[in-house]
Image 1 (cartoon, helix red, strand yellow):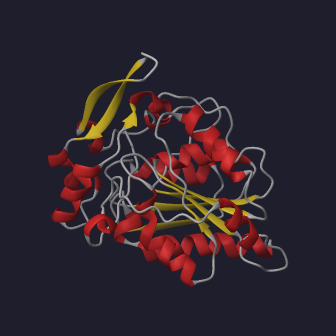
Image 2 (spheres, helix red, strand yellow):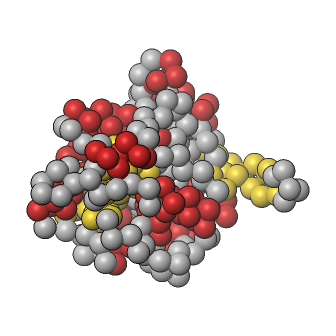
Image 3 (cartoon, helix red, strand yellow):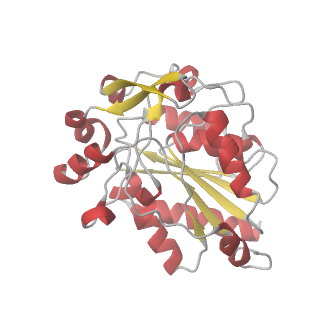
Length: 280
């Protein structure tokens, strides 16, 4: 079952690994809009959407590189409550950003960007990093059933929760002693242990939510496949790229958390998408 999650390393809270790291690298939407009012060769705004078990600081290594290259960057929170809520929230944020946007999603974030970008003409490219890309009417559960299940599916723990209005649900966590082997095997064990202790859960219902729109059908797509991804079957990632007629597909020797283990490769693909969006 895939669930994204990415985490950062560093010291103290800045080094939060995959899960919920606390320092979101966030440029206010209005500022990003001003910087990203790109036409005539100016750089588009890059919006980075994290996946399950993580928060925006999982993109820190990518954000630093993009900012050094002069790109305005926004890294919004993904509430991990399901496609209807998460995509609606992101869509509302995207509407506040002026100028062209390159929209990037990791793992579950791929589902969210696919629906959130529908109908937004200023989203010029979609970049999927170890991501889930259902079509309209598909859920992750139905899409992933086309391929053998990834090892992560056997490492998830269910935890019930109750909302303030009395409704209930079930959250999914990665079992701490399984996170390194099934999710982040190319990171140091100590970093994976920190990630496990700080992970943000995702609502189980998110994996059966069906998309009502798939922006990748009419927006240029770029895909990064982690060939040793144990959270999403790499064969599924390749299938998605082919089905979406991706303009560029990059395969790298990484786990599910390529954002952390190989941030330069991830950044390079985003920059390619941004460059193409300006010169298309």
